Amino acid sequence: MKNPHRSLFVFFALIVLAALAACGTSTRAPAPQARAVTIPLTPIPAPPPTRTLDAYKADVARHVMQHNPERVFEGELPPMLPAVVVLNITVDRAGQLADVQVQRSRDQGASEVALASLRRSGPLPPPDGLGPEHADLMTFSETFLFGERYLFQIRTLAGPQRSGL
Image 1 (cartoon, rainbow, N blue to C red):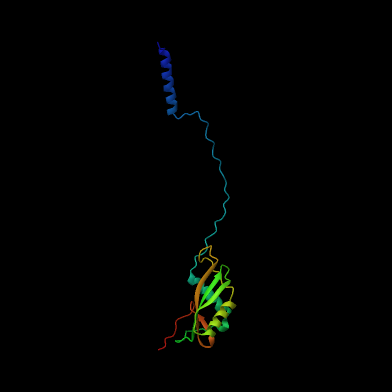
Image 2: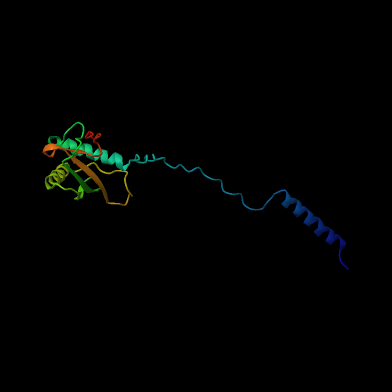
């Protein structure tokens, strides 16, 4: 025969354990307190200004014209241009000319003036903010518009052309 007192004791012990568990009392060790960690604040560099190819070409055109004032004419473009030269220009990230080629021209003398003027202007402004960061070279085209005596304006900065009427 079973001992009734023992069963009662086990029953009450289970009730006490259940009550303690419901109250959230635990026999686990207390969680370690988090310590404040000081992380030094370093300024985040501002992103480089957004630059467009047109803005870069304007910088290059001003640069070339400033380095070749004896070859530049001012004022309105004449209705008939004696020569037009389109150059394909490749620069590295520092603005050094990597390559320059005549893309279009019908006047050898004008081509030579455009090429010499560009080379004399180096290094060009660096193409910061243009193209992918991993690209070492950037290529663009620029047009030299010639008036009389092989004097030029650069299309990116040139004003309107006079009409022939």
